[in-house]
Image (cartoon, rainbow, N blue to C red; front, top):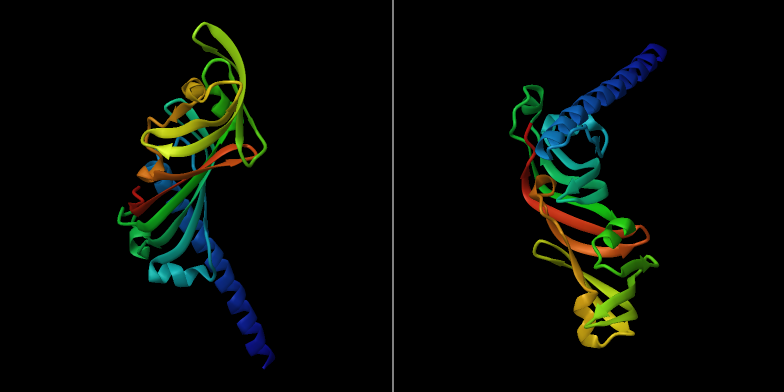
Length: 221
């Protein structure tokens, strides 16, 4: 009985070790593929959720794969803390072992942050952006005709074709029609990883957090 117990303990330890070795190998492979798919110069951090891993590897199906891309710049716009999740990844074990490209995710979501400094950088001359994490506030001085006028305004942020639009609202110190002198757009001129489309934006303590997603995404090597 004792020998059987020892054998079972050793077997469990070996299986756990094998599981961890296998997951590390597949995470490295997926990290390489994600770097290639996203045109990264470095290697992202990849974490495959769920244990035991071997059952996922044998089935070729990974419900959730998380990755961190760091900071990337698109058309002069740096996006920090880029991280994402690939859901329902189909990666047959034979494809992984032989470095084939037939690996896909049913859906990929990505989020990242435009810092307050970046948001402020694209503001019109004389406009300064601040905020409390829930909303952005613009203040400063702008020329209206030949007159320089001080103002404050709340900024509504929305996703538009080609970028993020910051629209001035509740303006104080300027006539309502002068909102055009305060409103502006932060452009996205490059493709985000996996050709995800920006679907949402919200004000956070550090600036603006964007969310994006795509479906039926190939993760090529």
